[in-house]
Image (cartoon, rainbow over all chains, first blue to last red; front, top):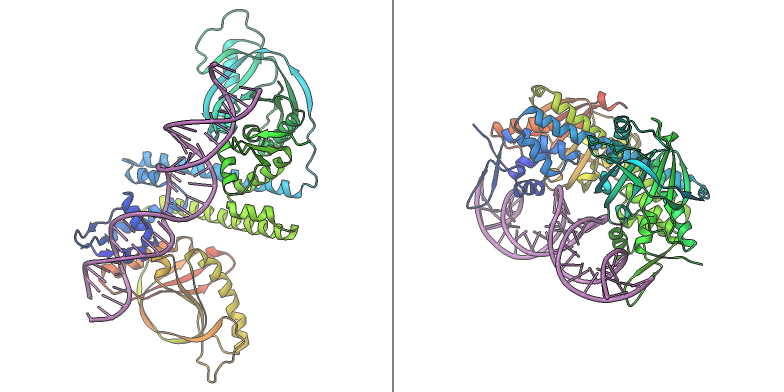
Length: 270
Length: 270
DNA sequence: TTGCTCCTCACGTCACGTGAGGTGGC
DNA sequence: TTGCTCCTCACGTCACGTGAGGTGGC
């Protein structure tokens, strides 16, 4: 025997509000067992309680409704587990980001004058390089960067070429102004004396152009990289220089501990 | 000399997207230093860069725009610090909730059959009690509960009355169905032989009515309290009982470690 | 019969993002 | 002059919440 529960009963049992239950009906996430065609009254059964609980748990973790639906409809356990694992991963990332945002805020508040960023001018020579390029959303940038940076040394070994300097990245302005654009990471190499074959996957041999830049070094993690960008951008603007080219970064040291990273941030000048 | 920056320049320097900058202008969070009245072009100055950075930091922490505005306009450092501290507190709470939601999900997934909840029937006798009652939003409930529970013993000492049983709480259905309603916490006392004076603040002497209930014990934190509610509600519904009264809880033990709490959850029956 | 529960529908919220259609500045 | 940057305006997104106005069921 299926006990018929009104929406109010079901709400009390599941701790999902009535408004929320109606919403979940509208979007097809949790359909009442029965709807009276005359009155429109929704009726649920006790068998639906565990489903509602599962939904609540996932929504508490901010899993999007569409994804919760996918989890509930997943054909088998492994598909389900994969979706859940993916979401827990995202949660993990988000927790780390929040943690880092808190630290960043603390730094901003405790800092008395704003540690001066030392800016120098430098002329970067053009070079050949092993490159990976993609057009992507700003939000994908960090993950993409890590993957591409990890791939480059393996590809380099395939080419048999000599490495010729610190790895770098080039980032289109639109990545910042419009939240999407082209990014490149590269490993400088001595110019190849003969053509390099295929089989390098997404990696390519290309030339990285020379340019004059305003440059500042960032010691530590990229948590506060925006402060360096701000210093450089302000410097270039105050001098009335044309800084319209894409920004470039050189990764002098990237050990496991991000606090020990050393990076050069380069803002191109005219 | 104030360097005039176009919205694109300013976007690159601050890492706020152009759309976001326009939005912040619309809502008055960050106004351009100048707007060309003919073209509508926005112009910013380098002096605005630090302000933009501060905004970005706070928004990264999900501080609502209205609050960021309040922080920026705070007349003095202490008002500002108070707003920031309040927000960091909320962040802390939220991190804890996320943590607990993850654990709760893990529990739901690893649990094989769903630990059976033992349900018994009991008749609760009416009693006099020292009570604190409020109408509140569901989201305020936990904080309010902690404050009121902490206050009750002090108030009891003021009355000179004898405690007569475990503290409890009574929660209106609308708290769950409609996200707001009346909540009461109480400390049972022997019926006072003479009127109790005023000066008890928000606490009152009142009578807690008797009722018959379906009851289950929750050992551990209230993280998974909804599972007990679900078991009781399903039980009552399946037996076709009228369970429309407000839910009641008794706090048998609330030591510092929430995993050692013991609570009786009572679903009233007709 | 009363009043409590339930219903729909249209709109609001929050912090932007999207996209059409158009104009200004070097 | 071209095309790149900038503009407005209306609407969309996400997960509901609000509120008006009305009806069903015990």
